[in-house]
Image (cartoon, rainbow, N blue to C red; front, side):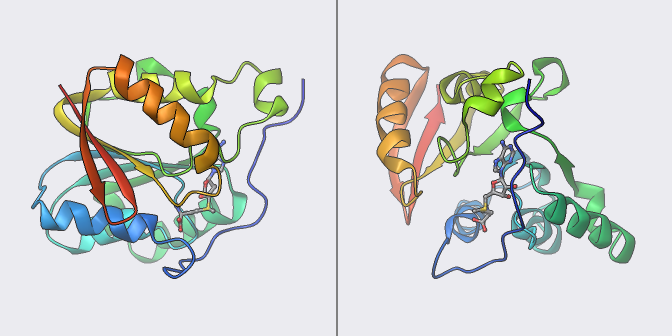
Length: 188
Ligand SMILES: C[S@@+](CC[C@H](N)C(=O)[O-])C[C@H]1O[C@@H](n2cnc3c(N)ncnc32)[C@H](O)[C@@H]1O
């Protein structure tokens, strides 16, 4: 069994290179989604999704996962310096492919921009889910009417795209089309 497949380094916000997190919060704001429960895959060192939701008056509660030591350290610093932000924003370190069903609430919005980007043999070696199993688990934990997002400009969209296409035909979701770079689905 190998060590946890962690993300090496941390990712700073660069909207020109990777706008998915900003497009996600733009969507939440445009749709006026408030008081929601949100899951986010991949915090970045910037923690944009959680911080923005804490600052914009939406009262959306965000649970986010990172597999980067630098990114979770940035969250610890955020919590020390801006405790009020962490009332509604909780980030945790771990491998998304090891999510435990019993610990997940039902979400109003689930943002999965990095499907197929980081899963490899290491995740397999310690019993990690496949990408499809992870997407299915989070679909199960999306409330009826809730939203699920994928990132069409992902570096792995050549793999994620076909997965999403197949999943959208088999899962209880409706295709809501594109919002900026995000493919948007809604749970039936
Ligand atoms: C390229 S960065 C993008 C960060 C942010 N979403 C953005 O677009 O600015 C990829 C993110 O995926 C996270 N990540 C990679 N593999 C992961 C895994 N197995 N489980 C949880 N998070 C993971 C990293 O920690 C990092 O936050």
